Length: 201
Image 1 (cartoon, helix red, strand yellow):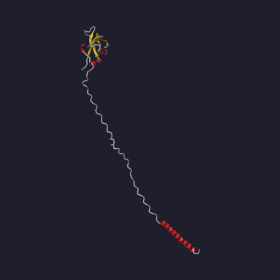
Image 2: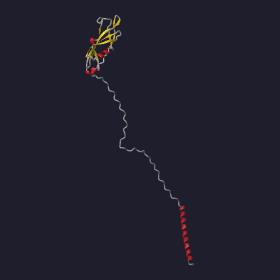
Image 3: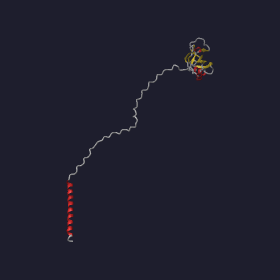
């Protein structure tokens, strides 16, 4: 037992020396770390400004639409020229040789004033006759009253019959005259009138 005591003491001293050395080394390291200047900070990277461009429309492969063209000036209106060849005319004509011959008492004697025509109306050519190319005439007799109006219209003759009579009577009824004057007074007088229906070619 006397021999083991020095061994234990030597071991304890050696362990204490090692521990003390470690503690001193650790303290030295801590002191050096506190005294050392801090590491230089890493410089921040420089700021870069980037300008954002407007987004361009995607290329669809089609050309952009052309701007609208200004409207063209309207062409001048065409000049109207009257047709020279208008085709057949459905106009009835009058035949003067048998026109307005006074009839009745005193018809052949001279008077102060014979009946004078003021208004004559062309008869309407019947459409059925136009379509068939029919021409003809109507001889009528009527009375001119004291006011110059036509009364008592009567068809004396017509050709062809049953085609132009109605149109002739309707036209004659619209005639107007200056009445015949006898001894200063208007006097009724009977008149014969022929209307000819012809198609102008």
